[in-house]
Length: 365
Length: 130
Image 1 (tube, each protein chain N blue to C red):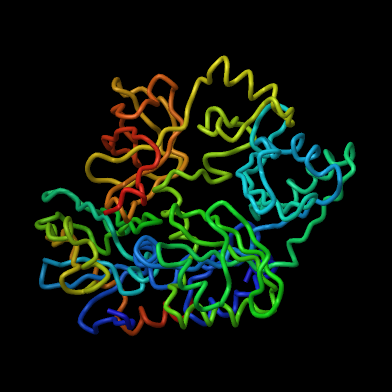
Image 2: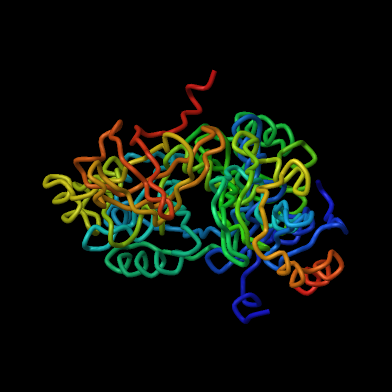
């Protein structure tokens, strides 16, 4: 066993996942379940019923103080003034060049109190940047990652089963509420990373295992990071480290809607420039036309066989039953319906760019 | 097939492939361990009939939702048949890796290579030490 393996962090749900037979893999410094019964079954469970994911590796940062709003307008990309108490908003954390350090969800818990959920791999970097920016404002920025276990319950029946089983009233989609779970204070967020309705529960780590057991008993299917990835890819949610990097700006990633430059956030000038001048490349979702499964790193080829981009995420999409992915391509080739080829380990697979999302849960009959 | 199974009549390659040898012909596939590690197979593209394959080299790829894996030839020869049914039902590789999930049939060019392959017992021992 290598040193790296022995120093992996474990979530409060690590042992129950292991006992259920999950395959565990290193992910962003944590040992996390990648699958239980199988990616395809878990994916389908979330699309048709309800699945739950241990996402306790994700980080939490609390922002509190009279300067909270002014600080957040400077720190993150969206217009935080629009968020009411109990509201939620998607954010990008940018560097001065407009590159994306991380993507975040912001929840407004009180008048001067906010909670930010970070990606595990970026938590420390995010915290450092938030702390640096906060010095100019009357606000406290606290790392509260150890305070919570995080359980995402997702799927068309997720909300009903959680409300009935845990006897909580959940907030509507894109809202947040203080609740009690396992008789301990908890935060319920009407958000997720699957395209389905559902909830993300921030709960006391001490009650995480019994709560997981209760939901399992109620018929919620345990799911791993493998299904989480195929679910988010079908609905074209970006993944930091794949679609989003410090070298790519939100405009080329198709996330201009989450940037309100007039708020003066760090990187706003660079984002405004990218918005007005356009970008050389754009992120385009695509579907493989026939056989073949694209993978991250595969070159994208134009009509003449010339390289015009690169795949950032690719998989077999279980709900679409074909290869699908996202790629940065030359901007003139990013419009939906453009014919391209993906070089999948030497085989040129015909593909066509498509509109977001590739799979639309709202249009399901 | 939920439980590990390694039929006695097969010969095994340490890259987790099996061969059913009948004279100078053989059928190849991947082992229970290989399909379990890979997870549900969603795509398999066979080589062309007539292709020459080389022992210890990749002759095909199998893909699960998340990963792609090379399939290694346990023996050398020429491909005489491919399992076309897997095009529509690649999950057979998981469900029946030694039966309906067979991958190719081969006319062996060097049947004596089979002496280097493992018995079921030797292969099981190899797995225990992984």
